[in-house]
Image (tube, rainbow, N blue to C red; front, top):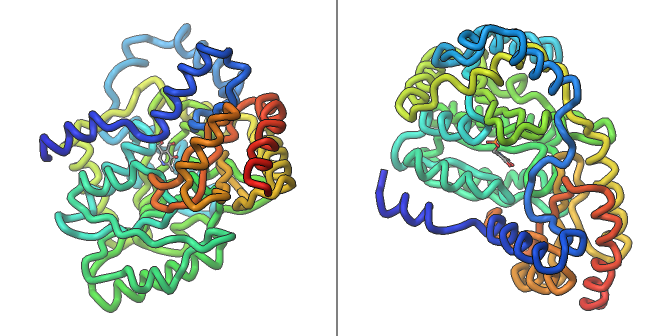
Length: 395
Ligand code: PLP
């Protein structure tokens, strides 16, 4: 760790946060209903009613000492068993609780996994656009981020660029599908090709390349799209999951790491995960939320609201002449800036009280991210303002 780096990370607010704070100030000035805040990815659909009822019942009826006690460091056995059984049923896999490590959400899953498989100075490939914290997580693990852009307009992997990016120092590749910020979902063909390329590189170098699949949006897909389950295609896979989005529990900090048992060395990797969890103090994820997992493993929030928002927003903006990636999942729309500088576009949008995030921090210039995890009514009311913005650019 480097104290200067930590200070500067603490002092520098992300563009998303800046915009979110600006939105709050603006809402206080002109009224919340007059600000079209699309800055942040907080779920707008509550956790299912059944979930809240079960949680209340657990708190009311169970022994509080047992309910709030420490679990084992990698997590409560029944939570891990429920996750393994659920994945096995859905994806025809044969995971066991020993393949799983419970965490405080996907962010913790990623920091633990990266520190467990990346040595100082090794490279980690990121596909742009990507969740901005990836660079922070990779650098904290001692790694060096190597960015490979995805291809416009479907945002699948650019395999020529990937081939150029893989070196003897590549330790891991992070994928995030459905993607924040593009909403793109990697197709089965794309995952197969990626797996083949990584396997070939592993064979050539005799070194492992871990595929870290960051999946907080796995269940948020629309129109019957399937998200390929990565362990079926590539043995050296680590899955980082959280219930932040699928159950609308971002503040509760609950997720897991799955080390694929298809990797013959999985026990060593899992030991590294446990060791990193220990070294970073990420042991025993929140007990209450671990203990409710077996009760709610089959539930998701009402995803249909996001699908309706997607259709409305994508349809309206495309109709006005904006170009956007068609989002098959997550709750973000990635729109091409009508001028080369997306920061200038985001500033202009503020004139119409529209808050959208410029894409530079996502590792790609020239786009803005619109988070449509807002009320459908906000989207409807924002459409005349988007129209004025489109007119300003003569779209
Ligand atoms: N990965 C991606 C792609 C995300 O969008 C987010 C949160 O928005 C995270 C990881 C972090 O998720 P969590 O809240 O579960 O830590």
